[in-house]
Length: 173
Image (cartoon, rainbow, N blue to C red; front, top):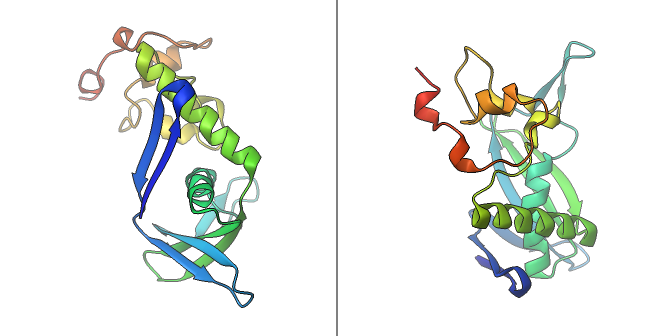
């Protein structure tokens, strides 16, 4: 199933093709969308309690992916289904459509679109979020983000010209 969301004001088109898309109906004949994600493990580590627990909510980036699908398909709710790659166990999370979340997704898309058009970097989201900081990588480890050194060195990081940054090939030995 192909998706298309157009924003004429920003000259922005969001398009995509769903990999695993299922439209089902529940016992009340209400349609819903199921987005299937395979993940390494359903288990999560809690550094506070130093213990493992089974994930109890969907990953925010997967919710942000599902919300536009719900909007385009005109469906009031969906499910994110996680499949543990090792055990095959599944975990379902219901996600109701939220107009506020859709506005947030569109705002983010517009912001990234403007950054691409002006050749500037967007705000460093992962660096400012303790739960996502691992996406940045770590000195002496394999780099995940090609702007690691520049972002880490600049405590007051703001949007900068992309051309000011070194390509990843110069960061990794």
